[in-house]
Amino acid sequence: MAYAAVFTALADPTRRGIFEALREKPMSVGEIAAGQPVSRPAVSQHLRVLAAADLVSVEPCGNRRMYLIKRDGLEALRTYLDSFDRRRPR
Image 1 (cartoon, helix red, strand yellow):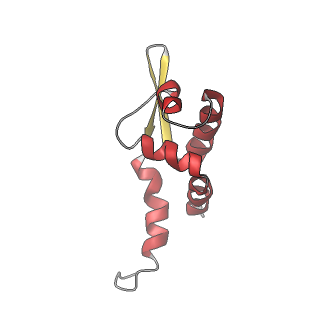
Image 2 (tube, rainbow, N blue to C red):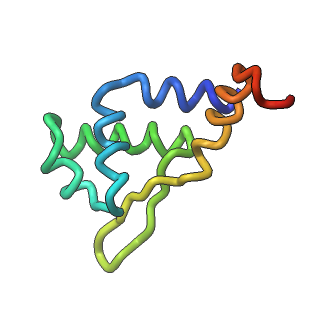
Image 3 (cartoon, helix red, strand yellow):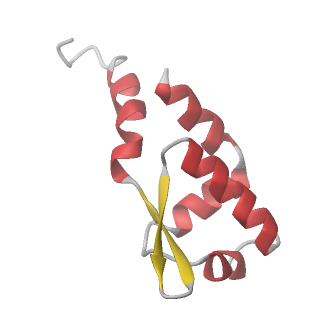
């Protein structure tokens, strides 16, 4: 039930906001925190949850760590939701 981790991670509105912010481009914790109503340490904690759910990855870039969405991390959720679509063959 990999999709359950995705549901849990995205259930929190702050995590959803962080995830949605990464839709445009990879960002550092500082860049993400600038657009969020929580502190940098809180953003880091939320990013750990998103990473554990396989929704974001991190890449070193000089002395910063850039976070980006893992598009394939949503695949388990897509598969689960598609299972409710009667028009799709199983």
